[in-house]
Image 1 (cartoon, rainbow, N blue to C red):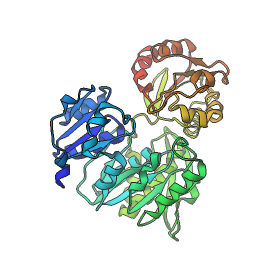
Image 2: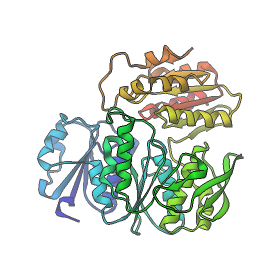
Image 3: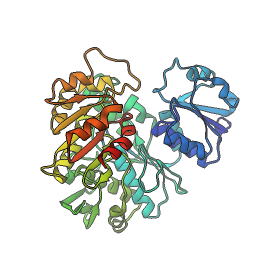
Image 4: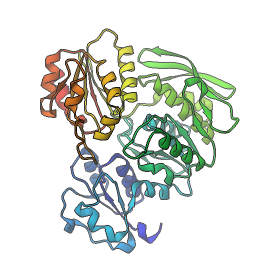
Length: 434
């Protein structure tokens, strides 16, 4: 560890990616200080693990560690004009993506990229390597249901990371092997167009030392640019709350199950299995481990499964909404569905407006929260009201009125969906529906 890593500062420590990095240093007994705007269960957990966290703009709260022994890591979600960003300018702060690149340097890194499914695939991969005795370190973009954390510290050389395409972050990584789930158009506030995004994925692939596994169908998950055996799933069928299927890795195959809704997660499991086998996990260990994967919070997470059904999901792109609604309608045919959706980013809502309308109108009742702006400023003509105007019977309401509005709709299945803070409404929804 260099002298600059004697202390670590995180500006925006409460983010899911930032908090995983913070946990990495805390688990290595490195002092951590962080700022975030809001106290959350995630920041409170970090405090219990030893981090010092400040929730206001008073820079006098800084412990006083010197610039020559402190690395400052920031997220672009905190504006460059913010007092904490300005205070740490002299420390030569780095982005989270660059910090992740430095942390993974010298490790056997397995990176999962893609516009959808990164978190599910990397979480399944972490479970497979762990259950196979390969003891990985993992940085996950979601909270694992089994462990209640987004980080795992292992003792082996293997390290699992999500390779994020936002802001071209994954170009800081040079993985040993990788998987790409999908490459749909997204983040068009960052990329000039879909071709620019595709070209950047191609540049990422060039930085991978070994194979990159990808595919658009379950039957053709193959390494890119190499004549390796295929990995795929066959005989996929719904089976009492799970998907049963035959997993093929090269010339060998075996039957297994995955207790995650949505056939797209079978595809994610195949990608994870291909990477796990590359790292040394046997087919026998992989098929034995898959049924015990407990899932990820906010990825088709059940909060009620009784008379009323309440599911929370992170979907924030039309493709993800389609996968979610396909799963729900398959599992609960002829049930009335209330979709509570919080659009994430003005630019994404603008760029995929028609796609959002097409998916949102599939629900029997659509309730829209105001757009979660995150790092953005409003865009004229882009709002939840504009979406609602294109969806028959859609209702726009704020978070404080959502539960009562949903209750009055008398639906069988309620979905709380989005990448912002719509999860804060779940306890009230749960109480009212129960």
